[in-house]
Picture 1: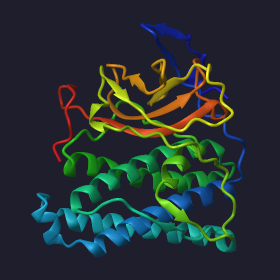
Picture 2 (picture 1 turned 120 degrees about the vertical axis):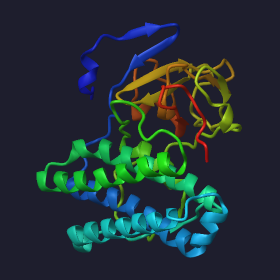
Picture 3 (picture 1 turned 135 degrees about the vertical axis):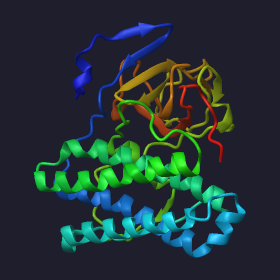
Picture 4 (picture 1 turned 45 degrees about the vertical axis):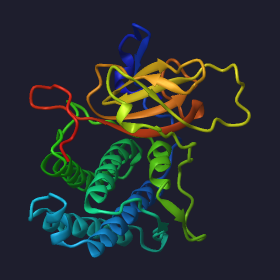
Length: 305
């Protein structure tokens, strides 16, 4: 399925393909989508509950954050709990249960970085899932959650991380499987009675040196290709940004990719066999979340955290 931007011409410029068909997920029901949202909200709720019980306001101040930052994170935690309760009440006995999670942080700074990831991916997931709702009341309710999640993300990125609060005129939607692939990296197990989600987990895509992933640079990537993939198959890196995908050939050994120098803000990187667009059936690994923060003059800058 093509997005509305698929009506524009296919452009090839300096080896980079510009195309942004939205991911071709199936047609999940409203209950499926609400449970998908609840899965993400359970994850965020558990993250904030655990982190804010582990750290104190003094811990945040000692880590260099403003004394009011801890209180704001507590407010975010309350929002996530409210989202869980709302979705559980809406779904009733069809509601999915919380899973067991493993969060990779050991101090307030790494807690903030993971908060940035969860809020950003949550935003993209809600945007991508919104196209599936048939019940307009559910769509309206999801929009009220999304707008709050976006405020969380912008606050963490700007007021706390001292980066940019937005990426550009458009946010980046993620397909269900794309969002689930990132979230599932923090899930260790789930109750066997939980309903099956309308999503597939792709292979993980990692960057051995994340700091090297910067516009205009070449960065190393790591992933495990499926065993049935023909070794002669050409692979590409798809950089999802706003309503476009910038598609770049991987190196001959598929171990590195050149980052387009025009990218700014939140970007997701996928490995795909498709040189022309983004399709779940042709996704090999990812996405991985990249962040190219920029200043008020649109110049690139690392977050000042």
